[in-house]
Length: 237
Image (cartoon, rainbow, N blue to C red; front, side, top):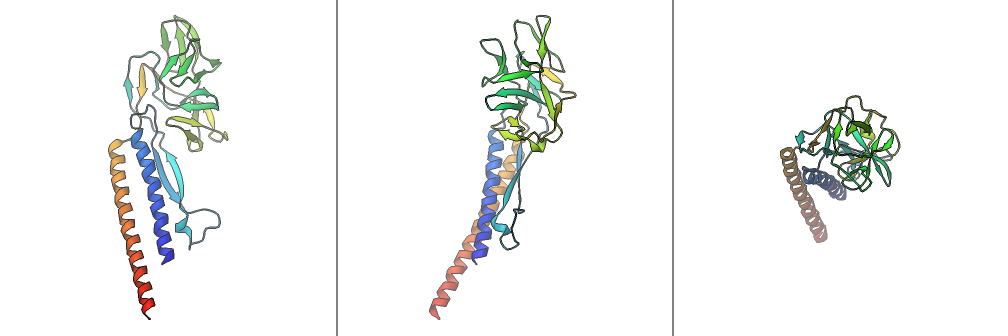
């Protein structure tokens, strides 16, 4: 009976993890450049036996990097990637990568993210010393008719190795993702990329998860009732 209850408890913990992941997707449905996370469980921990496998579900996060739809903003410093790739961003913790192209200028007229991190160019930080800004499809930046730099736009051969940081930042801490230059980034000036979260699908998933959790709760209650009944019968013998 203890194994049965422990098995159900492990399954419930797994369902809670899935619910947390789904709720996070829904919460970021309007986050620019956000990528949907799907959670799976594998009982492949070292030393796990068939007897105790159900007690040790291991969550594995898989991120859907498919592009979201682009929408027009008309802001010259809003940039979207129509193709594959990521913008490279300089943060205090090192280089990060994002599809969020909501950029601005700091006091030094350097191109930065809304949180103040520098947007990297192929030669370092990008300075916009002018008013007329044009950004080409490959990331070339022309300011008042003169070339001001080129956006550092990279792609990865193994995106599964990237680690999410926050809503729409990713890192490659162990350098296992196979970074390379993006072949065809398709930069779109004056556009941003929607989150690729499908809200209706996530809501349906959340309802299914809640129903599954309720079903497991009923099973746990039944097992507890049976345990009490067995204990009472033994006590009468």
